[in-house]
Image (cartoon, rainbow, N blue to C red; front, side, top):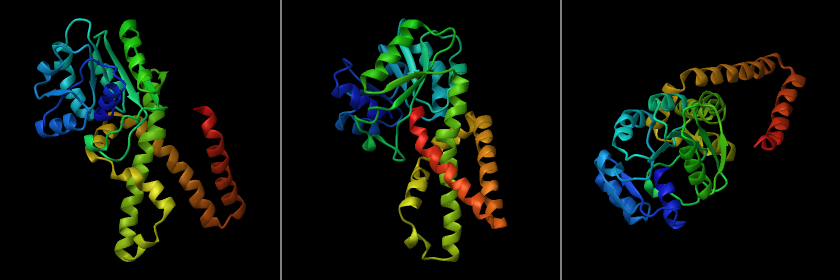
Length: 271
C-alpha cells in the first residue's frame, strides 16, 4: 500500500519529497530504486519530523505500536493518517490529536512488498475516511485531497460503521478464502489429483488466501466483534443451503442460487 502510494505521489508530482520510514534498510533501498520513495529513514521520529503529511502503511498492530511516537514527533500543523483496514481501534488510539484522520483505501492485492506496488492501485478505488467530532477540518480536507489526487473516490464514514461494513465485504471474504483453501488441502491429501481439477471459480475464491498472514491476524483481532457477526450471518446462509441439499429440495436450492445471482447483479448499483 505504501509503495503504491509513493509511486502515485511521485509520478503525479504531488509531493516535493516522499520519505519512506521503516525497519529494514534493504527493503527501503529497494523502494528508492523502484521509484516509490525519494529517500528513507529507519528512525521513525527523524523520518516524520519535517513531514507535512504522514501516512502510516503497515499492519494494524504495528500502526498501533508506533502511533503514539509519531504523534509526538511530527511538527506543528502536520497531518497524520493511515491506511489500516480497521478504523475504530486506530482512531481511538489517536485520542484527541486533532490532525489525525483515519482512512482506508479499498484497494490492494494478495501480493505484499514494494515489488508488487503500482501507481494505478488507487485509481477509481473507494477511499474511506473516518473523521470524528474532534477532527481538524483542515486535516480532513488534506487527507480527502490526497486520496482524490491519486485517483480515488472518497467516502466519509463513522469508524464503527466502516468496520461493520468491511467485515462483510473484505474481512469475511478473506476468512472464507482461507477456510476454503485449508479445506481443499485436506481433500487433496485424500485425493492427490484434486488440484488438477481446480479452475477459474476455485482460483477466484481462493486468490486472497495468499495474503500476508500478519495483516489478517491483526484485522481479525481489532475487528473481532464485526468479523464474528459476519461469520455468524454467513453461517446461517450456508446452513440454509446445506439443509436444502440434504432435503433434496430442488425448488429451495434453485431459489437460493437465483437469489444470489440477482443480488450480485444489483450489487454494483450500490457502489
